[in-house]
Image (cartoon, rainbow, N blue to C red; front, top):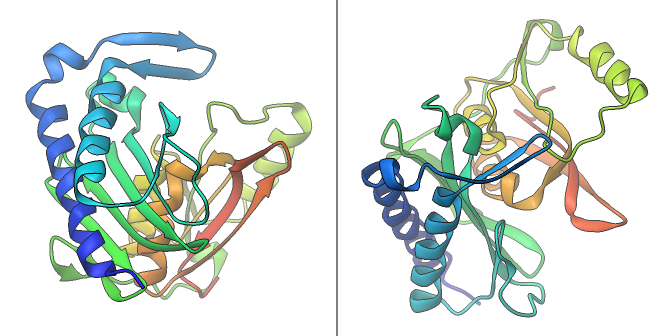
Amino acid sequence: MINIRQELEVAKRASKIAAALLIDNKDNINKILSNEGRDVKLKADIESEKVIKEYLLANSNFPILAEESGANQDLGNSFWVVDPLDGTSNYSRDFPICCISIALIHENEITLGVINDFNRGSLYEGSIDSKAKLNGADIFVSSIDDKSKATLATGLPAKGNFNKESMSELSNELVSWKKVRMIGSAAMSCAYVASGQFDQYQEKGIFLWDIAAGLSIIKAAGGNYTFKSYPEDQFKLDVVANNNCL
């Protein structure tokens, strides 16, 4: 058995350390390291991941899967999942929708998640042992049960499929919703589902580190999710997460 509440506090503290770095040192770390295709990587991604990993390694015993550096050792079925800066392009252009996302998978189950929306000082959390919270106050998913009245959050992932067939399928899906939002951060999209501002998040070809924490928080807020992995990459996923009414 693990102490989930203790590990949740570790994740929250790690996110706060990284948040301070991303805010206080933005002038120095908002530097592009690579800008290929639809993906952009900043020095900020690397520096944030470094301080998160250092804290997790010093205060917890699980291996780490991180977006920039991959797995630090054999993961087994219990490991941290870290996205040090979800919404990198937004961060780079001072569009204030980006966050730090940290989750713990234990025995192949997403057991806890933390999303730090550092631009707003908003800390989302949830676990299998605790309710979803925003800065300590309980949050809940919406109760909307009709797509024609609901808001969908989605995106076009950097390594997604943009052929004519896929885009036509996406277009047909989008028109069935009342509103559609693409905010450039899968983790924040999930946080907004958990807090009832959006009703469903779905995306094809997204990665585990983008959405693991968000899925945990959605579940803790009363929602539900499903996903399937790609045969060629177990960490690449098709995801649907919603308020459990749609």
